[in-house]
Image (cartoon, rainbow, N blue to C red; front, side):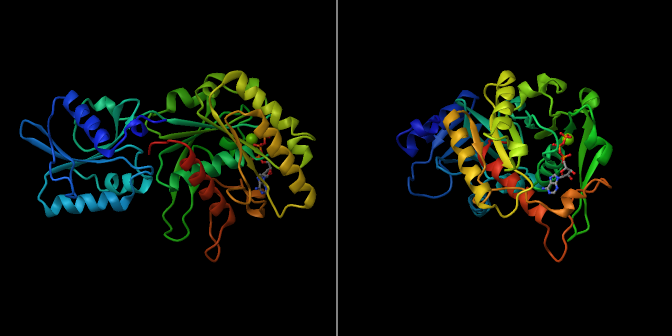
Length: 361
Ligand SMILES: Nc1ncnc2c1ncn2[C@@H]1O[C@H](COP(=O)(O)OP(=O)(O)OP(=O)(O)O)[C@@H](O)[C@H]1O
Ligand SMILES: [Mg+2]
């Protein structure tokens, strides 16, 4: 249960947030006109008056709700405003404000009993309250040739075009990825012709290259656990295990998956684990049967592990363009007649992960 859910009414939550502003030196005046849209309280410090709107909803605050409050601010001549949410904000809601570097507006959410700022145009409290930690995603299967490198590269690209600052680290001493892309993977955009690039670095250069401003770091792992940097596996919040429904990849009774999960848990007890079907195509009756068996094995483990439903949610389809990828640093995202299956699949994967994980942009 989150703290916000502990509040019986929206008003309790509002009062709690008001107290948080008092804690950081503001005087608070609650808006007594209960049904008036707009702000819930004013936070006043010296000549600063911040109109604060509090949102205790089940969902993230949407871009529309942010724009509505911004409209209200300009209609009512309010000079500084903030929205504090119990659930955070959608990525487009934050980027709509961040892209324009809006000067008089702040967005924050309640986390671990304090306000964490998603966007802060001018210091409200200590700047160091702005979250800057990166989210680590490791792509690891204890089996060669299942698509770890292809998936690391293209997931990195899909997250980058979704507006996230991403680095990909080639954590495999074989350095297959780095040899293909060099220091930058290019994410083509056939529609605008304007490409995006994603930094790629070798494990050995990671310490000197890392900038700490990435919101997401994707690790392409070696299939031999001991050849990976164990410290980074410990830091990982989410693992992706690519596999296919072939017994050669998954094992007869999913033993490759079970071995992979065991190895992950040897060094990391808490990370989320997502099993992703790669090289996916129309499944045969046998494949469907195997899928059901694997799903049961995984759910019996009762671990923080999900087998992503390839039909309902996401899979990476078998494609020629991915099989042939690697002769140039461009990712396989070129659209032909408006379509590109890998691009669609990886954007879906990015969206799925962002929905399930609390990743800051
Ligand atoms: N969805 C896909 N469709 C077609 N081919 C694919 C797909 N995913 C991966 N491949 C191909 O499978 C092969 C293995 O992929 P990749 O090198 O990414 O695997 P890996 O798990 O990183 O291997 P290793 O353990 O050797 O590092 C490559 O030839 C790649 O192009
Ligand atoms: Mg590889």
